[in-house]
Length: 154
Image 1 (cartoon, rainbow, N blue to C red):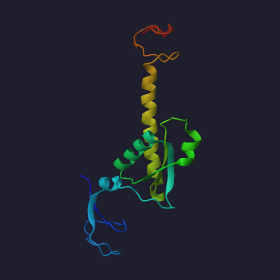
Image 2: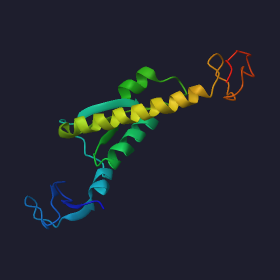
Image 3: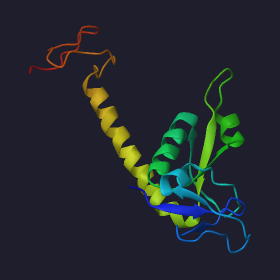
């Protein structure tokens, strides 16, 4: 079970579960687990470190993985990359994901793990497609049904 922590709703400070009042704000703390805390958006500040800029789908996947690892992040729309890479009518929007400097290495480890998982998924998809035309193929078939490429014998 996830260990609870207490959060100050005013200044965002974290405390052990045994502390009930914020030392700076003198307000009652809110109880959360580390996972629930990681789901809270991290407010932007100048000291945050950019981990990745990418399309929305991939940034969301990384943000979800970071939350599962207990790492809070801030995601911001990136106009610079959007305007440089956008095609008129395109639905590709770019975002940048930021973390606190002390969590950067942990976030990069999570990012590398996601990339490795994606590489394995891509390799599995490649094995099921014809290398010449990309058409789906039966793994036992000696040739591609679309382009006729000889795929070998099984």
